[in-house]
Amino acid sequence: MKIPKIISKNNYEYMFEKEYPNYIMYKEKITGVRECFCRHELGLVKEKIKPSRNLQKIHKR
Image 1 (spheres, rainbow, N blue to C red):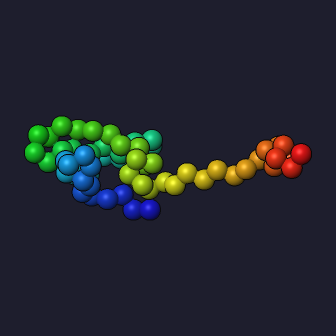
Image 2 (cartoon, rainbow, N blue to C red):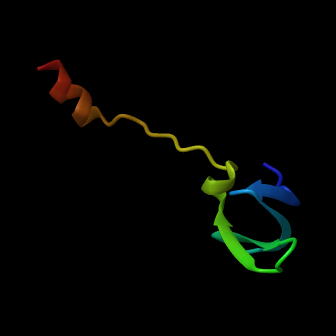
């Protein structure tokens, strides 16, 4: 998914600054404070959990 250039989070607007392997750095528009967000916080990655076979066997007993 594409990284958004401007995001709104906690009533603050952030502009894209730099991308790291694990985090994306944004800069707050008014104060200039930099903050890092992980891809999961931005909604770029969705968590997928596959049930293991062991759990399925336990429930069938």
